[in-house]
Length: 458
Image (cartoon, rainbow, N blue to C red; front, top):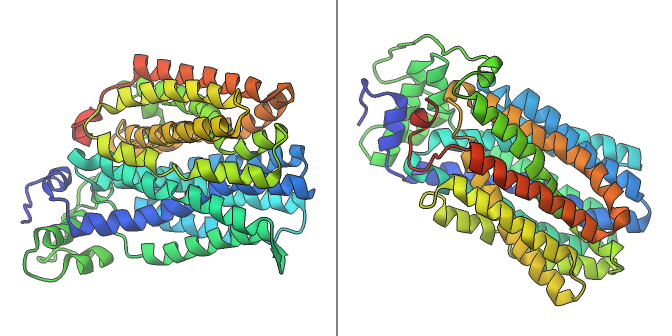
């Protein structure tokens, strides 16, 4: 099925969805599960850390901020760097960084150590998310691109109820060490296991071709075609795992495509870059403002730690449904307008949650807000990776996404300051941010559904 005259993009687009895609998405999704597990345990163990006296509210703010500052650095250095080092190499290295520092953080002796180690764990987590979006976007045909990115988000957000359940069970305990430490150990151990399995993933053929490594791209594509078309010969998995040269032993190479960071600031990418910088700066306020602070908001309302964890556990149970809805609709409904509608929905539901007092209303608005938030997340993760060419994709996504990490770090201080005026005031702030998000995407965002990546980036 190999056609030496077809480009890598053409071969990827005509490849039927099959065994390779299922294995690939399973391994990528496993890593995304532990990335999001680590991000969301902050909300659940944060309330316990404050109530136990290990962290003050001010120190918890620094703890959250340190993680996001680490993500900012990781996104800039490794996320953008994956345009030079490769998707697979960055992917594997980042998970190892996250695992090691999260494990160390579980044994932090003081608040200062907890905050410092959280920064370094964040370096791995932040860039990993960028590389996942870029990697999946390049490996999957355009007809299923949105669905497959959404599937990684479904798996990732399954971590939210898992983190909530483990926190509810372990945080109140003290077996050898405080329960919150066990919650962190579990995440680090699982991520290390997923790192071990991921070593067999192939490099992105699109990236290899953009770097002039045509023979390697051809070898991997030959393996994928043999595996998915079920043709004779050696198994595609063997070829993919080792990046074997093609059967003729040829080493046809081409000049690498030259990309510059400054290309982001020229047509046709200038408007997209500006749009995504504004989008990422604002969406984080609405998204993580709720996700990282929900149990703390409930504590401030006078809800006990136990009831706070129970409420957030009930809310967390719907987490995978948001990206599941994205998986069903992403390639059928234009992603641009999906993002606009969901941002407005998040704003309205957030105001409902922020002004609720009755337990049923708290859980109801919280569940609907979670559903809309995570559907929104899956939609924009697919969308952002489509807007730049392969040679510049990780740089474009990494640079613009880094603004969300920086924003999230400063948002922690902003929310801490606004919280003294009450929970409703915080959610008014979050609603304004999401309304602006909807506006900027509606006005500046291009359409992408059903188009080959190379068409969108022209």
